[in-house]
Length: 512
Image (cartoon, rainbow, N blue to C red; front, side):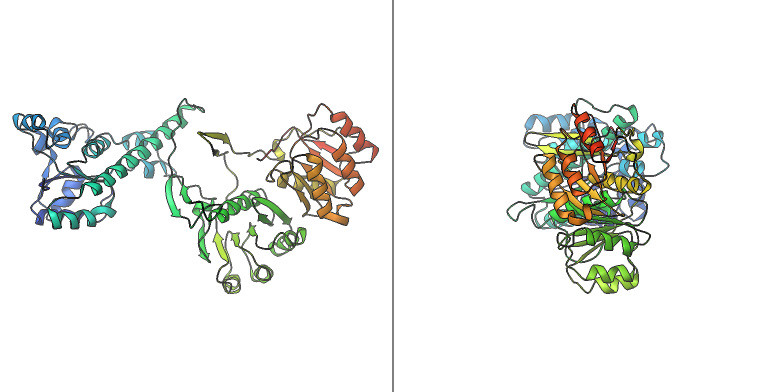
C-alpha cells in the first residue's frame, strides 16, 4: 500500500514545486500534464508526460488528455480486488496512488469585469473533476489533494509510513466532493443566469467560509459566516475591519441591516440600528450633523448600537461618536484624526465598506425547517412608485421631504412598521407589532411633542381608519402608505377631516 505513483495537474501552483521535489526524493514517480509538467521539469522535477502513460497525444488544445482508461483504471482499481488488479495487469495499466488536482479558474474568469462567454466556457474543467471524483471515490486506496494547504500533512505521513492514514484520506475525499460540488454549482448558476431562467426546478448554491464565529444568536448556538464566491463589494462580507473585537453573529446581522439602510441615501446620512431595526436616521449637509440627528432621534436606544455612515468619518464626527458606547461604526473611510480618537476604545469595531449605489436586486435566501425560501431583494424606491394623492390637500415641499425620508426608512423596519419623520430625521419608529395601530402608538409615544407637524410612513396599507385618527391626535400632518385596502375610503375621509395630506404609492414594503 505504499505510495509509488502520483499524478499532478493543477491550476493553482502555489507551493507545488517543493512538494513535487520531495515526492521525487521519496522515490515516487510523478505524472503530469501540460503547463504543470513544463513548470515541474523546468524546476528539475522528473515529471513524465500524460501522453507517455496513455500512448495518446493531448488533443483539442488540451480538452482531451486524461480521459483515458490508463488514467481512470489506475485511479479506480480497488487494490484488494483481485479481479481489478488482474485487469490492470492484462491491460498494461499501473495504479496511481496519489492525485494532486485543482480545477480551471472558472470563478476567477467570471469575476473579471470584461470576460466573454467563450472564456467562461473554456474554463469549465472536464478531466479535472473526473480525476478528482474517481480518486475520492476510491479513497480507500488513493490519496487525493485539491488544496495546497494539505501538502505538508501528506508529506509528513508519507515520510513516516510510506502511505497516508485512512481517516485522513477520507477527510481529503470529503473536501474533494465539496470542491467539485461548489465548482459545478457556480457553473450551473452562471449558465442558468445567461439563459434567463429565473426559477429552475433544482437550485444549487455555494458559499465559501469566511470565519468561524464564537457563537450564534445565543451562546449555546454554534455559528459560521459564509460568503458568496463572487464578491459583492458593498457587503459586510467584504468589509475591512480596522479596529476592535471580532464580529459576532448578531453584529454581522445588525451591521448588514445598517448598511442596507444607509445605502438608500445620496446626501450625507447616518443610521443607528439595534436588533435589525433602525432606531435613528438622520440626513444633513455634513456627516457630523447627520449623525447628530440620528443620535437625537432616539438617544436611549442608540446606546450599544451599530452606526452606519455614507461619508468619511472626520474628527468632529468621531468626537461625537466617542461620547457613547457603540458596538460598530461602518463608513467608507475614517480620517487619520478620527481613527486616533476612536481606536482609544479597544473593543469598538471600525469597518470600512465600499458603499456603491444599489445595483440589480440580489436574491435573498432564508432557511425554514426542511427547506428554503428565495426571493428578490426589495429594491424598489420612491422613484418606482405610482404616486397618487387621494386626499383634498396635497403635501407641501417640506412635507414631501419628510414623507420621502419616512418611506426610505420604513422599508427597513420589521412589520408592522410605522415611521415618523421631521426635518431630515426620524423622530419615532414603531416596529414588529401584531397590529398597525399598535406600531403607530409606539412611534407617536417615542416622538412626543416632536410629532406635531411630522410625516408618517407605513410599510403596508391601513386596514381601517384608526391609525389616521391616532396620527391626527398626535399632530401628524402628512402620511405615506401603499393604499389598496378595502377600507381606504375610511382612512381618506379621516385624513380629510383632520386636514392631513395622504400619499398612496402602490408599493408594499413588508419585512418579516
